[in-house]
Amino acid sequence: MLAASTRGDFLPGQAGNGGRAVALAHMTNAYILLGGLTGSLIDYPVNLGLLGLRRRLQQNNVICFTYPWGNWQRAGDDIAAHAGLAATIVIGHSGGGSRATWLANWRNPPIDLMVLYDPSPGPKCDPSAGTCNARFAITTLSPVCGGQA
Image 1 (cartoon, one colour):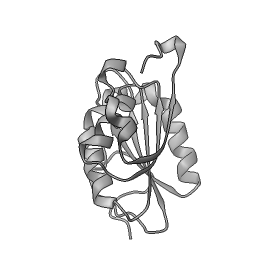
Image 2 (cartoon, one colour):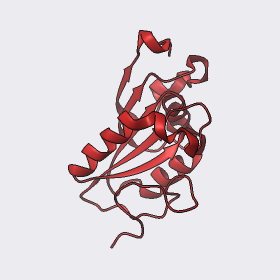
Image 3 (cartoon, helix red, strand yellow):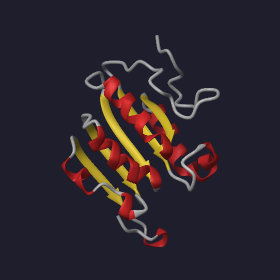
Image 4 (tube, rainbow, N blue to C red):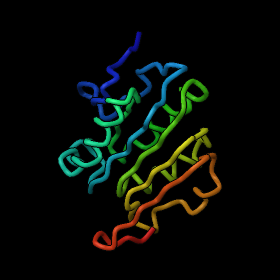
Protein backbone atom coordinates (compact mmCIF):
# COMPACT_ATOMS: atom_id res chain seq x y z
CA MET A 1 0.00 0.00 0.00
CA LEU A 2 1.29 3.44 -0.86
CA ALA A 3 1.38 6.10 1.81
CA ALA A 4 0.68 8.82 -0.74
CA SER A 5 -1.16 9.13 -4.01
CA THR A 6 0.63 7.60 -6.98
CA ARG A 7 -1.03 10.26 -9.14
CA GLY A 8 1.86 12.58 -8.34
CA ASP A 9 -0.31 15.42 -7.10
CA PHE A 10 0.85 17.87 -4.48
CA LEU A 11 -0.16 16.91 -0.98
CA PRO A 12 -2.56 19.37 0.69
CA GLY A 13 -0.64 22.25 2.20
CA GLN A 14 2.69 21.00 0.90
CA ALA A 15 4.83 21.65 -2.15
CA GLY A 16 6.11 18.31 -3.38
CA ASN A 17 5.68 14.83 -2.00
CA GLY A 18 8.40 15.00 0.66
CA GLY A 19 9.20 11.30 1.13
CA ARG A 20 5.60 10.32 1.84
CA ALA A 21 5.41 7.60 -0.78
CA VAL A 22 6.83 4.11 -0.84
CA ALA A 23 8.50 2.98 -4.06
CA LEU A 24 7.67 -0.47 -5.35
CA ALA A 25 10.54 -2.74 -6.42
CA HIS A 26 9.18 -3.46 -9.89
CA MET A 27 8.27 0.13 -10.68
CA THR A 28 9.87 3.19 -12.18
CA ASN A 29 9.83 6.44 -10.26
CA ALA A 30 9.93 9.82 -12.02
CA TYR A 31 10.93 12.90 -10.06
CA ILE A 32 9.71 15.98 -11.93
CA LEU A 33 11.08 19.46 -11.18
CA LEU A 34 8.79 22.12 -12.62
CA GLY A 35 9.96 25.33 -14.28
CA GLY A 36 8.77 28.86 -13.67
CA LEU A 37 9.95 32.12 -12.18
CA THR A 38 9.30 31.62 -8.47
CA GLY A 39 10.06 27.95 -7.77
CA SER A 40 6.73 27.68 -5.96
CA LEU A 41 3.19 26.45 -6.61
CA ILE A 42 2.42 29.75 -8.33
CA ASP A 43 4.34 28.41 -11.34
CA TYR A 44 2.00 25.42 -11.77
CA PRO A 45 0.05 26.93 -14.74
CA VAL A 46 3.19 27.50 -16.84
CA ASN A 47 4.05 23.80 -16.64
CA LEU A 48 1.08 22.34 -18.50
CA GLY A 49 3.29 20.50 -21.01
CA LEU A 50 5.34 18.87 -18.27
CA LEU A 51 2.19 18.00 -16.35
CA GLY A 52 0.85 16.39 -19.54
CA LEU A 53 4.02 14.29 -19.72
CA ARG A 54 3.48 13.30 -16.09
CA ARG A 55 -0.02 12.12 -16.95
CA ARG A 56 1.36 10.00 -19.82
CA LEU A 57 3.99 8.47 -17.56
CA GLN A 58 1.35 7.62 -14.95
CA GLN A 59 -0.71 5.90 -17.65
CA ASN A 60 2.33 3.68 -18.20
CA ASN A 61 2.62 2.73 -14.51
CA VAL A 62 5.36 5.19 -13.62
CA ILE A 63 5.04 6.63 -10.11
CA CYS A 64 5.54 10.40 -10.39
CA PHE A 65 6.66 12.84 -7.72
CA THR A 66 6.30 16.50 -8.68
CA TYR A 67 8.09 19.48 -7.15
CA PRO A 68 8.48 23.19 -7.84
CA TRP A 69 12.16 23.80 -8.66
CA GLY A 70 12.59 25.53 -5.30
CA ASN A 71 12.14 22.13 -3.62
CA TRP A 72 15.03 20.41 -5.40
CA GLN A 73 16.57 19.28 -2.09
CA ARG A 74 13.31 17.56 -1.09
CA ALA A 75 13.38 15.75 -4.45
CA GLY A 76 16.97 14.70 -3.73
CA ASP A 77 15.95 13.39 -0.31
CA ASP A 78 13.11 11.38 -1.87
CA ILE A 79 15.39 9.91 -4.54
CA ALA A 80 17.91 8.92 -1.86
CA ALA A 81 15.16 7.36 0.26
CA HIS A 82 13.97 5.26 -2.69
CA ALA A 83 17.44 4.38 -4.05
CA GLY A 84 17.64 0.82 -5.27
CA LEU A 85 13.91 0.20 -4.94
CA ALA A 86 12.94 1.28 -8.45
CA ALA A 87 14.40 2.71 -11.63
CA THR A 88 14.88 6.47 -11.26
CA ILE A 89 14.08 9.15 -13.82
CA VAL A 90 14.68 12.85 -13.13
CA ILE A 91 12.90 15.33 -15.40
CA GLY A 92 13.41 19.08 -15.15
CA HIS A 93 12.22 22.09 -17.13
CA SER A 94 13.80 25.54 -17.06
CA GLY A 95 14.70 26.28 -13.41
CA GLY A 96 13.78 22.67 -12.62
CA GLY A 97 16.31 21.54 -15.21
CA SER A 98 19.15 23.52 -13.69
CA ARG A 99 18.22 22.35 -10.18
CA ALA A 100 18.14 18.75 -11.42
CA THR A 101 21.86 19.17 -12.13
CA TRP A 102 22.32 20.32 -8.54
CA LEU A 103 20.51 17.38 -6.98
CA ALA A 104 22.39 14.93 -9.20
CA ASN A 105 25.60 15.93 -7.45
CA TRP A 106 24.23 16.92 -4.05
CA ARG A 107 23.69 13.39 -2.76
CA ASN A 108 24.97 11.57 -5.83
CA PRO A 109 21.84 9.37 -6.04
CA PRO A 110 21.66 6.64 -8.67
CA ILE A 111 19.74 8.11 -11.61
CA ASP A 112 18.86 5.89 -14.56
CA LEU A 113 17.71 8.71 -16.85
CA MET A 114 17.89 12.49 -16.57
CA VAL A 115 15.88 14.59 -19.03
CA LEU A 116 16.38 18.36 -19.03
CA TYR A 117 14.17 20.69 -21.09
CA ASP A 118 15.73 24.13 -21.56
CA PRO A 119 17.61 24.10 -18.25
CA SER A 120 18.05 27.69 -17.24
CA PRO A 121 19.47 30.01 -16.44
CA GLY A 122 22.56 28.44 -18.01
CA PRO A 123 24.99 29.79 -15.38
CA LYS A 124 22.89 28.06 -12.68
CA CYS A 125 23.51 24.59 -14.17
CA ASP A 126 26.07 22.51 -12.30
CA PRO A 127 28.78 21.77 -14.90
CA SER A 128 29.81 18.62 -13.03
CA ALA A 129 26.36 17.09 -13.64
CA GLY A 130 27.89 15.27 -16.60
CA THR A 131 29.99 13.31 -14.12
CA CYS A 132 27.14 12.50 -11.74
CA ASN A 133 25.63 9.09 -11.21
CA ALA A 134 23.14 9.41 -14.12
CA ARG A 135 23.37 6.48 -16.53
CA PHE A 136 21.82 8.47 -19.42
CA ALA A 137 21.13 12.19 -19.82
CA ILE A 138 19.16 14.07 -22.47
CA THR A 139 19.16 17.86 -22.71
CA THR A 140 17.03 19.83 -25.15
CA LEU A 141 17.53 23.51 -25.77
CA SER A 142 15.10 25.90 -27.43
CA PRO A 143 16.52 28.90 -29.29
CA VAL A 144 13.20 30.64 -28.61
CA CYS A 145 13.81 30.43 -24.85
CA GLY A 146 17.44 31.48 -24.99
CA GLY A 147 18.69 27.86 -25.17
CA GLN A 148 21.93 28.24 -23.25
CA ALA A 149 22.88 25.50 -20.86
